[in-house]
Length: 86
Length: 86
Image (cartoon, rainbow over all chains, first blue to last red; front, top):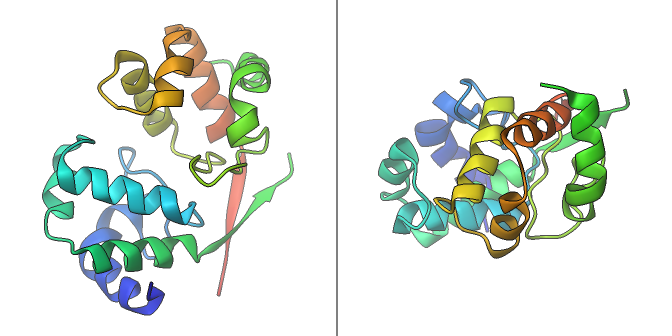
């Protein structure tokens, strides 16, 4: 997968809700920063196929190729996060 | 919602896969640390009702009350995360 190509796709399609930094920009959108790569790829694949339902995501994911999905997952998974101890 | 009660529930039910720290312990489980609270509550509610499908999560969520769901969401959402700049 190509995180750099993923970045381009994210800038066009994902960032309004999920941010370039992977931090949610609205209360319905999850954070994606540092998320597990196979989890992200599976989520996008299921949104594309309609097995997982969300109005916005079903529309957006329909346009993605398998390569897009792999690349977007690589981009968001590649953002490093740290848990701040309480 | 009561994050402290959520912590108890997480210790019993969620932590094997999602960690007490909200960081995934296996490649199928997403990180939950600092995740958006309404997103988490919606995910658990949909897993419980079967609208969202995942074999493990459908079984686990079936046992949760509305209060459990709110409390677990509050616990994981309350973990602070930071994105590390590249």
